Length: 136
Image (cartoon, rainbow, N blue to C red):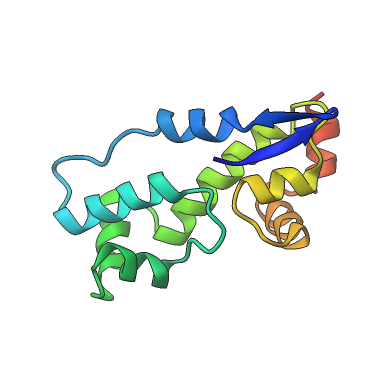
Protein backbone atom coordinates (compact mmCIF):
# COMPACT_ATOMS: atom_id res chain seq x y z
CA UNK A 1 0.00 0.00 0.00
CA UNK A 2 1.00 3.61 0.04
CA UNK A 3 3.96 4.77 2.10
CA UNK A 4 5.14 8.23 3.03
CA UNK A 5 8.02 9.83 4.86
CA UNK A 6 6.65 11.37 8.04
CA UNK A 7 8.91 13.32 10.38
CA UNK A 8 12.03 11.66 8.98
CA UNK A 9 10.89 8.04 9.16
CA UNK A 10 9.08 5.71 6.84
CA UNK A 11 5.42 5.52 7.85
CA UNK A 12 3.23 2.68 6.61
CA UNK A 13 -0.03 3.98 5.20
CA UNK A 14 -2.24 2.04 7.60
CA UNK A 15 -5.09 4.54 7.25
CA UNK A 16 -5.65 3.58 3.60
CA UNK A 17 -5.62 -0.13 4.38
CA UNK A 18 -7.87 0.34 7.39
CA UNK A 19 -10.32 2.43 5.38
CA UNK A 20 -10.52 -0.19 2.64
CA UNK A 21 -10.96 -2.96 5.21
CA UNK A 22 -13.84 -1.04 6.82
CA UNK A 23 -15.88 -0.93 3.61
CA UNK A 24 -18.90 -3.20 3.57
CA UNK A 25 -18.72 -5.99 1.02
CA UNK A 26 -21.01 -5.65 -1.99
CA UNK A 27 -24.59 -6.62 -1.26
CA UNK A 28 -25.15 -10.25 -2.29
CA UNK A 29 -28.55 -9.31 -3.76
CA UNK A 30 -26.93 -7.04 -6.37
CA UNK A 31 -26.38 -8.44 -9.86
CA UNK A 32 -23.03 -10.18 -10.32
CA UNK A 33 -21.57 -7.46 -12.54
CA UNK A 34 -22.41 -4.73 -10.02
CA UNK A 35 -20.83 -6.80 -7.22
CA UNK A 36 -17.69 -7.34 -9.29
CA UNK A 37 -17.36 -3.62 -10.00
CA UNK A 38 -17.95 -2.66 -6.37
CA UNK A 39 -15.39 -5.21 -5.15
CA UNK A 40 -12.86 -4.00 -7.70
CA UNK A 41 -13.38 -0.40 -6.57
CA UNK A 42 -12.91 -1.38 -2.93
CA UNK A 43 -9.67 -3.21 -3.73
CA UNK A 44 -8.26 -0.40 -5.90
CA UNK A 45 -9.93 2.65 -4.38
CA UNK A 46 -6.79 4.72 -3.89
CA UNK A 47 -4.95 3.71 -7.06
CA UNK A 48 -4.10 6.51 -9.45
CA UNK A 49 -5.86 5.88 -12.74
CA UNK A 50 -8.97 4.23 -11.32
CA UNK A 51 -11.52 5.39 -13.88
CA UNK A 52 -14.86 4.09 -15.09
CA UNK A 53 -13.60 3.05 -18.53
CA UNK A 54 -10.63 1.18 -17.01
CA UNK A 55 -12.95 -0.38 -14.48
CA UNK A 56 -15.18 -1.86 -17.16
CA UNK A 57 -12.19 -3.41 -18.91
CA UNK A 58 -10.58 -4.71 -15.71
CA UNK A 59 -13.84 -6.25 -14.50
CA UNK A 60 -14.61 -7.79 -17.88
CA UNK A 61 -17.86 -5.88 -18.18
CA UNK A 62 -17.71 -3.79 -21.33
CA UNK A 63 -21.46 -3.18 -21.18
CA UNK A 64 -22.07 0.56 -20.91
CA UNK A 65 -25.23 -0.09 -18.89
CA UNK A 66 -23.10 -1.12 -15.90
CA UNK A 67 -22.96 2.53 -14.85
CA UNK A 68 -26.75 2.77 -14.79
CA UNK A 69 -27.09 -0.55 -12.94
CA UNK A 70 -24.41 0.48 -10.44
CA UNK A 71 -26.26 3.74 -9.80
CA UNK A 72 -29.57 1.91 -9.38
CA UNK A 73 -28.26 -0.63 -6.86
CA UNK A 74 -25.61 1.40 -5.01
CA UNK A 75 -27.46 4.71 -4.99
CA UNK A 76 -24.80 6.78 -6.71
CA UNK A 77 -22.73 6.66 -9.88
CA UNK A 78 -19.38 4.93 -10.06
CA UNK A 79 -17.39 8.15 -10.27
CA UNK A 80 -19.31 9.70 -7.36
CA UNK A 81 -18.84 6.54 -5.31
CA UNK A 82 -15.07 6.60 -5.83
CA UNK A 83 -14.87 10.32 -5.16
CA UNK A 84 -16.94 10.16 -1.97
CA UNK A 85 -14.67 7.49 -0.48
CA UNK A 86 -11.49 9.28 -1.51
CA UNK A 87 -12.66 12.55 0.01
CA UNK A 88 -13.82 10.79 3.16
CA UNK A 89 -10.35 9.38 3.75
CA UNK A 90 -8.71 12.66 2.74
CA UNK A 91 -10.69 14.47 5.46
CA UNK A 92 -9.45 11.95 8.01
CA UNK A 93 -5.85 12.30 6.84
CA UNK A 94 -6.00 16.09 6.92
CA UNK A 95 -6.42 15.83 10.67
CA UNK A 96 -3.09 14.02 11.10
CA UNK A 97 -0.24 16.34 11.99
CA UNK A 98 2.81 16.17 9.78
CA UNK A 99 1.13 14.97 6.60
CA UNK A 100 1.51 17.30 3.65
CA UNK A 101 -1.41 17.91 1.35
CA UNK A 102 0.65 16.57 -1.56
CA UNK A 103 1.17 13.31 0.36
CA UNK A 104 -2.53 13.07 1.10
CA UNK A 105 -3.46 13.78 -2.54
CA UNK A 106 -1.19 10.98 -3.75
CA UNK A 107 -2.37 8.60 -1.05
CA UNK A 108 -6.04 8.95 -1.99
CA UNK A 109 -5.42 8.45 -5.71
CA UNK A 110 -4.65 11.84 -7.23
CA UNK A 111 -1.55 12.11 -9.42
CA UNK A 112 -1.87 15.89 -9.41
CA UNK A 113 -2.17 17.68 -6.03
CA UNK A 114 -3.76 20.74 -7.65
CA UNK A 115 -6.52 18.54 -9.11
CA UNK A 116 -7.07 17.15 -5.62
CA UNK A 117 -7.30 20.67 -4.18
CA UNK A 118 -9.74 21.77 -6.90
CA UNK A 119 -11.95 18.70 -6.39
CA UNK A 120 -11.80 19.00 -2.61
CA UNK A 121 -12.76 22.68 -2.74
CA UNK A 122 -15.68 22.07 -5.11
CA UNK A 123 -17.14 19.31 -2.90
CA UNK A 124 -16.28 20.57 0.57
CA UNK A 125 -16.56 24.31 0.04
CA UNK A 126 -13.02 25.00 1.25
CA UNK A 127 -9.46 24.06 0.38
CA UNK A 128 -7.74 21.14 2.11
CA UNK A 129 -5.63 23.66 4.06
CA UNK A 130 -8.72 25.51 5.25
CA UNK A 131 -10.38 22.21 6.21
CA UNK A 132 -7.30 21.26 8.22
CA UNK A 133 -7.32 24.57 10.09
CA UNK A 134 -11.03 24.28 10.91
CA UNK A 135 -10.66 20.77 12.28
CA UNK A 136 -7.63 21.10 14.51
